[in-house]
Image 1 (cartoon, rainbow, N blue to C red):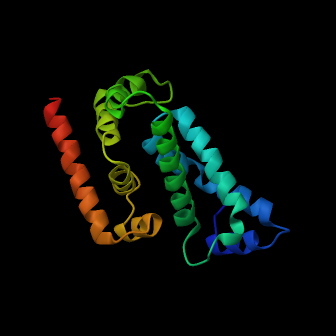
Image 2 (cartoon, one colour):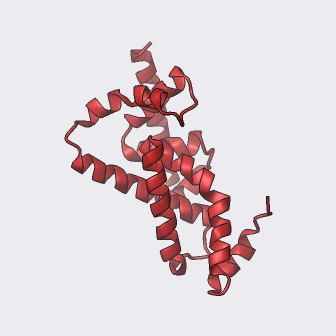
Length: 183
C-alpha cells in the first residue's frame, strides 16, 4: 500500500489538476476507518454504506472549505458523525416504532447480519451502546473502539474535553448497568 503523506495530499487536494486523484487516495486511506465509525452509530451494514457514500460526497463537494488547521481524518470524522446523527434523526422522525422497541432487537439483528462476525456478548454490547443517547454513543465509540484522545474527539464534536470525559464516564456506567440487568 502506498505511503500516505498528509501534507502532500493536502497540497494535491488544493490543486484542481490533481484534486480527483488526491481525493481517491483519501477515500482509499480512510474508507475502512470511517465505515466502522459510521457502522457503530447506525448499526446495519446497509445504512453504514449509504451514510458513507454521503460522507464522501459531502467531503468532495466541500473540499474548498477544508481548512488546513486540522487533519484530514478529523475533518472526515466530523462529517461522518454529523451525517450519521442526521441519518438517525431522519429515521427516528420517519419510524413509527418507538426507539425502545427498535433497540431491543439490535442484538438479534446483528447476529443475523452476515457482515457481523461477533458473538452474543459483542451483540449485547452493541445493543447497550445503541441505547445510549447519540452524543454519548459517539463519544464512547470514538474513545473505546477508535482509541481517539479526548483532544481529537473535542475537535470532531466541537465540545470541551471535560464534557467528553463526563459523557464517556456516564456511557460506561450505563453500559455496565445494562450488562448487570441482562446477566
